[in-house]
Length: 413
Image (cartoon, rainbow, N blue to C red; front, side):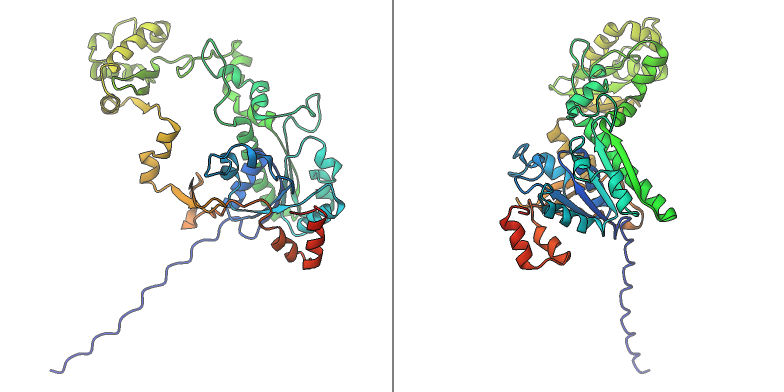
């Protein structure tokens, strides 16, 4: 029987094309500085938008100079500005504003967080721009809003944390402290981000853009919802309790034999019985009237905490966590920032990437939202000041001679 020819090799099926990013084709122009607006527009860049960051020629966004911790670059700037094009432009010069309007004529979104009144003086406030460009979504981010007695107050993050009452509920009974991250800036950034998405969705239906307004105080006041409602309706402000909980016990950090700290939270009386029997190895405490209910444990907080601290203080952190997990008690290790950078859960879920920068590749976390369709976020490079000025101006139709003249006069850098 003659040999049968080998069947032809079948080509590998092509990989299905990945879904486009949600904001592919959207152009954002931002006159921004510090954290609130840059962090908002970075979210847009990660989702595929082209973000043109307009900076002052004489130093750019002042967050570039906050520190040199990221291989010579400022850590705030690296965090909030990847994936953007930097154009160094003097907006006080009419020629600079003309270039900006050239960009705005083809833009979908404009974001600014200049000092109160500065954008309006330049004709760059949201209301003015939306009247001129009907499809533009224009965002004003401010500290306290456009009117009212606080409209012109300086609004740095720590100051707004204080005005919003966050500091009054954060810290120990003896000492209030501010949050260790720029909570007011981040709150405003995320409401600006969601406001832009909502306005773009509306534009898809109506064809019209429109102004979006976000203040840091309004944003952080919303985040203060629990203590605010507790105080307004309950008559008393929640106490500062450090890592403890004002109305739940045990709920705190406890030292371990190897010098670490382990946090645990007992949410109900069934959990307390398991903690007493399986972790503390003091079964007599399970139904002791001084401990058996959360109300009793809270009233006897010092004795409750002492019992937990004594038991965990004789264990290493790993053993303490293993016992707590086996007993079904919510727990965590009190990690440092360095331990967060090496967190096994982030590594196991492949949450780290590298982004390019003027100082070379830098580690960065993927954005928290995982999109359907497998499209990876666009985690572009951190730009050098004015890195894209010439390319952007050429795309607007400027000649080399015109660009050179603007640079000679200090309008661009």
